[in-house]
Image (cartoon, rainbow, N blue to C red; front, top):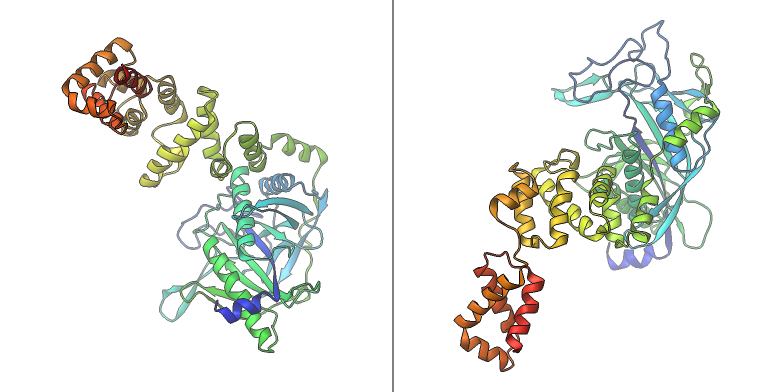
Length: 487
């Protein structure tokens, strides 16, 4: 954005709302028993119901409803005791029925809220207007055939939870922070795998701008099906700038659906934006109202895990961890659970455990490109290593060497330490003997140190470590050296 545009942008406020589509992690589809497994050969996971053959009837997936309730409870939303499935009518080649079964006037999840931490440290509260169940469409394949388009109905009927925020965000940074928070939450609850590359988590971005200080919303555009945090940020930034430039030039913003082109980093027109009337919503006559009993809601409420925000707060306030550590640990439930398991075995050492989980362990996982649940060193194996480090049996450097050996499958921490003779020398007599030998070997350096060259202390530490093969207890070594050199 050039200087002129930056000046102009200060006169405008962006208004952003997101419609996030989270594919629910059920084994079968929303209204049929067909598999939802990803990667199957085209059209091998499309049942008669998914293909909309005459005489077939949809049957709601109980597990999908249960997962929708879980999400609603997690955002402190109203759960509708009775909601209605509706037909959303439109034509698309990969939509076999000619309509999509969704929810409109009476969604399963009503109004809720989610606290979001933005990168600049601010905490905002995003109003979520609704979350409703709907089936996904199929997929048009444009690049597999010359001058033709194929249709794959494997995805048709896959259960989605569409999470609709109010237009309450005012920057791309806020929108991305909100999207990340929802992504963390659905994965934390286990209701969606969050795999954006496979399309399991994607969003539509509604963007408008208005004059700063005014309340009336501008004309919005919808950026369709963005499946990357980075692309959401870039698409919104581009669209805000495009709309401001157009309005500054006296042009009119047209309500439309746009696509983001990541190659050119710009949005482009896809089609004119439909309104609710265009879809001709009406209750699906094949599906009775969805009734949820109070007992079902309470059962799901009792089964909810400690939520990410609550756990993050506990890590900061009860364990004394820095905000950054708490954020990283709570970005993923498996990581937080791993940390908890290590800490339970090494109580009172929250910072030490966090440093190892977010440092040495995370680096190895990243290098191997594996998830923490597949780590060769589990929490029960890491804990004894950290216990040895805490008690001073080994140094930090030796601990890293032992961890590397454990990662390579060479055995437990204690077995490796014992086999390699890596325990630190903490015996005062043995350390004193090693120090005496070093000081006797370097008399001129001893004289220089006593003459005021304090920097030579590290030289003596290094030489003693070398003599003890790195096994001297560093704290005791420093204390004994200072005593010997002062005498």
